[in-house]
Amino acid sequence: MLLLEDGIGHKLYRTEQELATALRVREIVTVEVMENQTVAVGSGAGAADKPLIGVIVNLADYNVGADKGGEVNMFDDFDIDYNQQKYLIETRCSGALVKPFSAITLYLNRAA
Image (tube, rainbow, N blue to C red; front, side):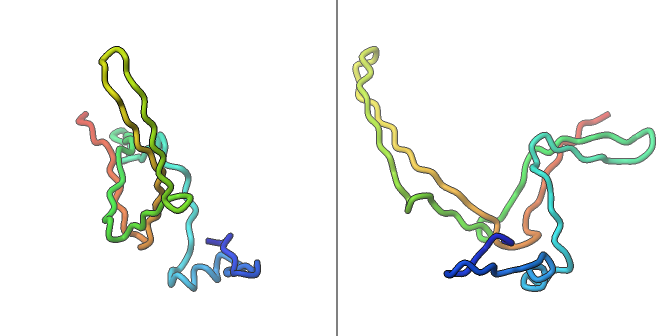
């Protein structure tokens, strides 16, 4: 959101603190990509790393859109081995969570 600009190229938010004030939060915390993410659970000798297995969001808090105005591509081909026409319809979608702190992360909990 710090990269957002108005119609004539001026930044909407000059600092992280301005953005935090606009979002009505105390601070903004940058997080890493969650691939191969683990979390330490427990303490001492019983501590273990648990792998991240999923993120749950309420789709009412999620906006879904499409690139290039929702362009849809269709491909067809004749499969000689099965003597039938095959079709593929493809589009690309994107999305963003628009309500802060509305996601739940799931970690794998293996019994010791």
